[in-house]
Image 1: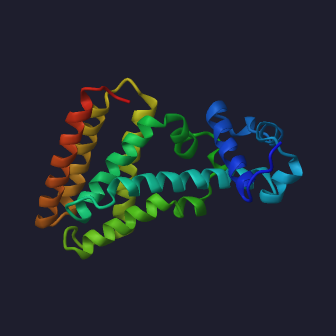
Image 2 (image 1 turned 90 degrees about the vertical axis):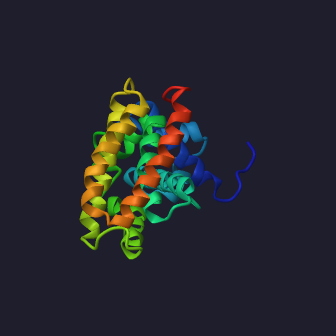
Length: 223
């Protein structure tokens, strides 16, 4: 067998853990033996990087949290219109990702035995959640969101978007444009309370941009 490049074994192990979690949907079904058998390494080689199964599961899921954050950042990067437009796009980016990756969303956000893979500390360190809070802080500094408790607003927006993301995962028969429209209504009520007048103009711009993309993709049906 060809020798792996330095660091490749660790990456292969993490990716294999996620594949097994998606395939089984059960933390308890992912064993060290099943991982090393699929990767093609020895248990000592795995334990060199991950001392326990808990460490292995958590690091694998932390890597996926980072990938999700990177995906969202790529979607909002260089988006015209400012911080509120980016804020609105973050919600839709997460909703679409959940609809396209239901099994992985369940593992990261909905699965049973999540305490084995997501701790209170790792949740607060979720890079996409930190990016959302930073985005809100920027909008406050830009005069688009009224000064207020950023942590409470972050959790309000995060919880609302995840509510619709979980609907996308649990009820795949609901068309994505309908989920988008429902989430838009829910977010508008929050937006009316948090936005300045300039912020409302930016919010309307963001929704017009999103409506154009939704209309373009609706013909192809929900992914």
